[in-house]
Length: 86
Image 1 (tube, rainbow, N blue to C red):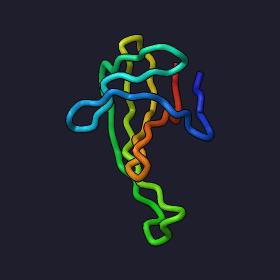
Image 2: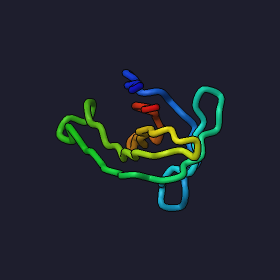
Image 3: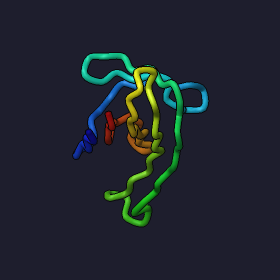
Image 4: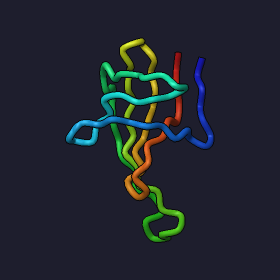
C-alpha cells in the first residue's frame, strides 16, 4: 500500500555528519535506516522568497523493510515524511 502524506508529516530524525538520515521516529516507533536507495535535491521558486522550497529528499529502506521518502527542509531545518510504501 502506498501512503502519500499531504501535507508531509513532521518527524524527528537522527542524521550522520553528512546530513543523511540514520533513524527516525514515526507513529511512536523508531525506524532505523538500513539503506539509502537514492537522494535528490530541489530548489524551487528561489526568485519568490515567500514561496521558495529548498529540500533534500531521501528514499530509504528501514531495517523492517519499509520504504519511505523523507526530506530535510534546508530553509526551515525540519524533517518530514512525505510517503511510505509497505
